[in-house]
Length: 66
Image (cartoon, rainbow, N blue to C red; front, side, top):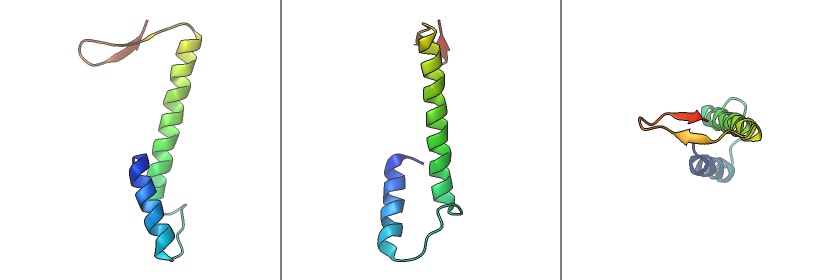
């Protein structure tokens, strides 16, 4: 789920006036999953850059570090 989709969902819930359980809602859980994946990817990129490695995109579209 993208940040824009999340904002739309949150605005619709906020203005709807109904009780919303963020721990059960599938859209809220999808956003949490995306957020965790982004944080994990940032941590991996930071670890590689701290080691002095450079992120490179290969000819076939793969990502590797050198």
